[in-house]
Amino acid sequence: MRVQLIYLLLSALAVPGPADREDRVYPYTVSIHINGEKHDTLHRFLGLRPGYLHQLLLDSSTAHADRNSPPPTLTLLEAIARDDVRKMKKILRAESFYNASIKIDFADRDKSLRLYFTVETGDPFRIRSVEIENAGPPLPEGLALPSGSQIGLAAGIPGTSTAILGAESALLGRLRRSGYPDAAVAGREVVVDYADESVSVTYRVDPGPRSAFGRTVFEGLEDVREKLLRKQIPWKPGDVFNPELVQILRNRLGRTGLFTTILVTSEKSPDAPAGAGDGSEGLRPLDILVTLRERARHTIGFEAGYGTDIGFGGGVSWEDRNFLFGRGDLFRLKIFGSKDLYYAQGLYRILSFLHPDQSLNLAVQPVYDSPRAYTSYRWRASALVRREFGETFVLSGGTAYTFDRVDQFDREQEFFLCSLPLSAQLQAGRRREQRFERVGVLLLVQGEPYWDVKRDNYFVKTMATGNVIYRVPGADFLSVTARVAVGSLPDADLEEVPADLRFYAGGANSIRGYAYQRVGPMIGKDPVGGLSLFTAGLEVNCQVIGDFGAAAFLDGGAAFAEDRPRFGDEIRWGTGVGLRYFTPIGPIGADIGFPIEPRSGIDSAFQVYVSIAQIY
Image (cartoon, rainbow, N blue to C red; front, side, top):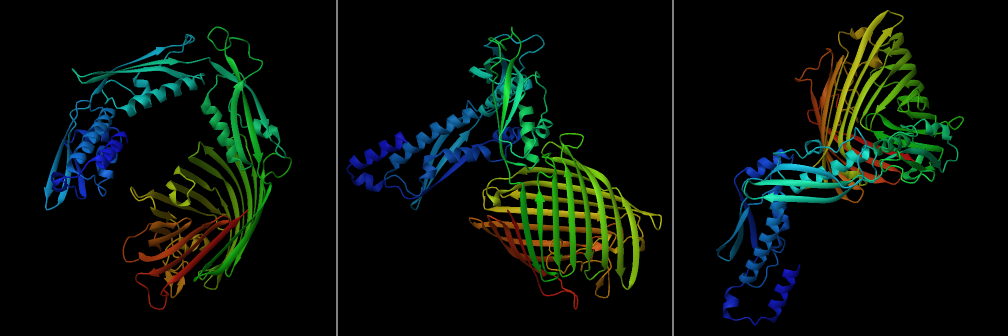
């Protein structure tokens, strides 16, 4: 900035002469050429994308930023380029290229000017030694400072500033997990040896007093009983302080769904003796203060939708998040109805069932379902234990009992099924505040063995689904969603499987453009259902403005009579476009889908899908 101000001042004071007018600069382009592949090899080693270094250098260039508003003379442009060299060398040193050199060159053809930066990176300087010194009270017996390799700074790796600062963060993290919440780096010394192209690093760390968990105090409770929350605490008073355990408590409280605000802080216990934690008087107790604000206990939810194939439908739900005795148990009642589907569901969830990360879910659901394929009257009762492992992995399993009366092709059958529903779910990624900036992966594997008590018949239904949301690099307004679903009833007899438990494809959540259940085995125009399923979809979403967005999609797949999918002529494809709008009370979506190869007399020219969800 200082250099630019000087240029502007000189430009204002200068009296243009003939030489200046001939030397006038026109809009130009900037190119950076990095010789050799050593820099890309380094960044692949560090897990960074190719071209990362080139982009860093380009972003630092004032000449590049001002290329469409050039200075008045070539002399001033050369001065700006020399200042860019200074900034680029600083970046290269941070990337461990201490011997790097940069040359400037110009090419001028027919008033088309190009500025070249030619970069010779040389070899990256590598870590030779890492020393970690204790600048505070001595550590207790059995506890030692880590080595460089233990904090990610092993000898031989490139000595980048990112690696050195990352190791410092890892060092403090290890100390804090060992009971030193106030650990700090008192000094850092980085010595560069140009003779052998190496870097030596010395950290001086002050651990501070060692601490233990003291009392845990909850504030802000109204309806929720404190006894329930104490079951979520993953430590005992007197345990060595560990901030990761504090985060586990925060996550457990968040998953209960009982609170809108969760603030966890620590403070020195007023009962702590003087000198506690300094290595001679034992551990300093830290009290944990948990400040909470409870959510509204009761909520009502609404949902509505329309599809060309299934008509209008909608539902309402009511839930109590602190049902009975303030123990955090949840009770939910939901009713849904459409032209061909009616059901009610009652759910009772018992929190912290035998473990703080475990819940017991008791549910009962009567259903009347009458699509084109069949008509069924079904009652299902289930008891499932759900166990969460951290923030990403969930297992559930239990037992279910289903009474099912199914009418298909004027043949009525009754089933009494005992089953063991099992599932595993992996979810990773992040959700930002902006609704169009979600990224991540969701994988779900389900299996349910059934025993038909009336017929003494066994079959197993399996299903695996995967969804990936990916942000397009360099285009934050674009995201791509890919999904795939595969299902099978291995070695099953189609006649022995209830029609409402077979696989069907087509419709809003399957293959858009085709009517519900219409892609698969059929008798005439009526679906039969299959023993296997494969569907896939690719959707590109674009944020247009604010909470408005647009989408384009391609869906494909089918249900199959065999117990394994076949990738041939039976696969049907549909495509279309849609609109997205996120309101404060829920999302609204509208899609129109077109079958790519419509079947005469079976498929319509298009299908429309609209969905509205509202929760408050």
